[in-house]
Amino acid sequence: MTLDILILGGTAEGRRLAERLAADRRFRATLSLAGRTADPLPLAVPARFGGFGGERGLADYIADKRIGALVVATHPFAARIAVNAAAAVRSTGVPALQWLRPAWERQAGDDWHLFSSLERLVDAIGEAPRRVFVTIGRQEAHAFERAPQHHYLFRTIDPIDPPLAFPHAMVLLARGPLAVEDEMRLMTEHGIELLVAKMSGGAATYAKIEAARRLRLPVYLVDRPAPADLARVETLAEVTEWLDQLAERAERGE
Image (tube, rainbow, N blue to C red; front, side, top):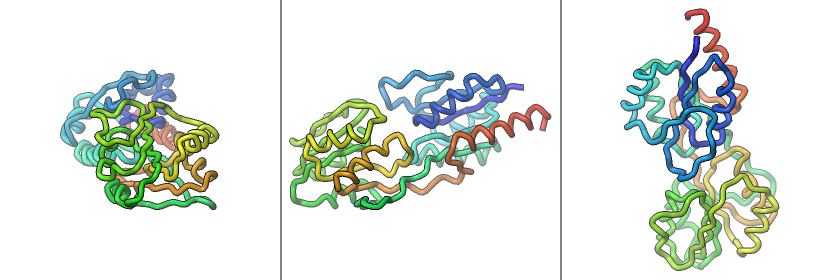
């Protein structure tokens, strides 16, 4: 019996799970992406792009496609889709699991400042002009227009649209992961005084955090939103073990 799996992705974790399931005949996986990246990396399984239309739309999709299991492997800051997934799970009863990468942990030498919102973070940068490296993605970049006195280096995968409307902003287009030495070189060349990031966690973007530590730079972090009401794991091994158990029960007709 083949079990239809819906992966809510948009992360390295979602792609890794798709690659694992692509060669497993017990599963037929679909990777759902928001479609926010103009040039996504090649995918190992069929994909769908765009939203579902809220929790009701996701629940309808699960029912219409006879989804046998849902894996939420979205970004830790994609709070709305995770909340919608939890609601859809309650209404459909589909087995579900969230693969949520662990948050970073403070190390000796880290100068971290956590904020509950990006707006509070921007205000905390201060009145005096500073050279700021911003790595939060393009969608919220315009929040920094409230503090145009600073010199910003934004790094995004796709261009910021519409363009930023303040004078001292440079946009660097790049896709990670990047090495610590490369991050240190970039920060040094641009005279960076402060790193801005989200508490994304995981290994893929940690190099910038380590680079800031080595350079003794402060790091301003937007803290994570509260997690959705879903069973959670932190590793691919835990996800595949859970799926193995579902497949075994399906084979037994349970």
